[in-house]
Image (cartoon, rainbow, N blue to C red; front, side, top):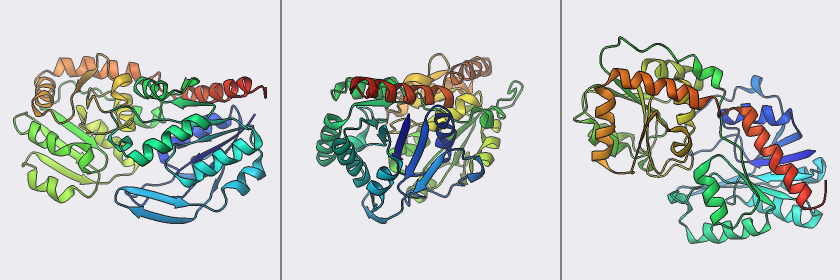
Length: 357
């Protein structure tokens, strides 16, 4: 089976997924651009890539928080690789609509990679809602990372929904799964963008009455404001590459993701593999699959609920140890192979439903 997958950028945490999928199908990944200008710097680790790929390139436009890439080579690349199935990473880029047009003309099934959830604030735009509905109508099915996005896809009317659990290269972060018993104090860690939607102002307010230290790894437009809100026990460490981040997971005792909007949250996969208890908001998609006896889910923006969760973990080392072990247990189900199996299954089902297999 030949599968063409269009996605925005070569995010490092996606590379192990594409490597695994390339072992199951004849895969070509078409990246719209090499980098997203809204994100911080990250190393590409090209030596780890084991799949056929093209970076299409094109004119890039930014308006507010939106980023659009106008690619000229989409149809040419699709005609060149003649895929049996095409998968697109959403409905927000012109390239995805060109792929839909190609599929309709060639009667090729199209799959949509849906990571959004009903709690995702970025899906509230009326224009995006209309685009989403049109893309869903034209698609043969969808693959999703977990429970919250599966519920969302079915609510949109998608009939063929396959779960392909978001995953990371667990071996990298398992190096941070050390024995944390006997440590003095408690270190809380956040890693990601310093952006208003991440809810870090709520975290800083909640942390004021919690013993321990809070470490924030990342950069973003909200950094100056957050520094003005932070107390002496808060450290800003700046952006870190994947391999450098492992040491922060190793030194931490609890991971916190206080997002107001978070379709998934790959850092929860990383922290779980590192053996950390997790505290995340209900608005974080991954929290509905990766928090089960190993931490707490709290409502976004609820300072008291977040404070209570952090305080309980700060004062109970045995609880942290038990929850950390449970995190590692849960993380074992979120592997690149499981993701690749889900995508390959979705493609196979779509082909069968359209009578092309």
